[in-house]
Image 1: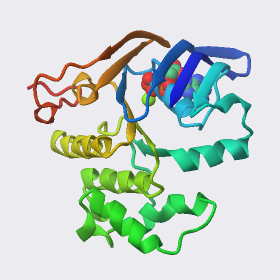
Image 2: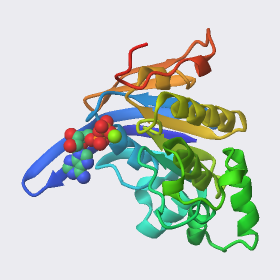
Image 3: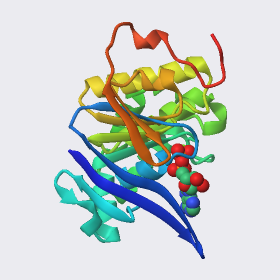
Length: 241
Ligand SMILES: Nc1ncnc2c1ncn2[C@@H]1O[C@H](COP(=O)(O)OP(=O)(O)O)[C@@H](O)[C@H]1O
Ligand SMILES: [Mg+2]
């Protein structure tokens, strides 16, 4: 489903060139749940933006369902992105003045044909994250965890095969973080491919596979042996338990 080969990304600003990704190769199959882990500044978000067709690599190849993403123009790229990928970010990026319902329907603006049953779709997406009773609430009337669940519902409304989440628990307390991780677990069980970026080992352990990034290169790519229920475990960076 996803295949990257010798991806490199260098940011060029004026005379300065910052090499960030230095030859990344891996495959991710349909239905996998993968965590991309690494400390701050190692290029996780850069890689995520490329996988999400928000940015292109400087060199290297990215095949998404056998489409060579590098060969697409901007229109084709956003079309592919809107069809296949749902995004969840650390900062929820919700419209502050809009209700949960309205926020959730936003990605539908970009689909080819605006569906007739938008309300029903939004209700279904909000139900999937357990927020049916908060449909008419605005972001400032919701907790951080609830806001992130609205953001997940927004990612789900186009029924994307792939969900990309960049530090989705990074702004949440432990309990809300666990709720969010249990939603990803459910989505994975329903067949979505999930790629989760985190600096937090305990969060990464919720996945089936961990790819470790260090200084723009992969230093580890391993499957996780599940010996215990990961729902019981989630650190949030600094907190010691
Ligand atoms: N648009 C940009 N222009 C220049 N440098 C950038 C840009 N975006 C990220 N970087 C640099 O790339 C490196 C990796 O950033 P990022 O991918 O955000 O890392 P991570 O998500 O792992 O914390 C950092 O050193 C950052 O300063
Ligand atoms: Mg980042």
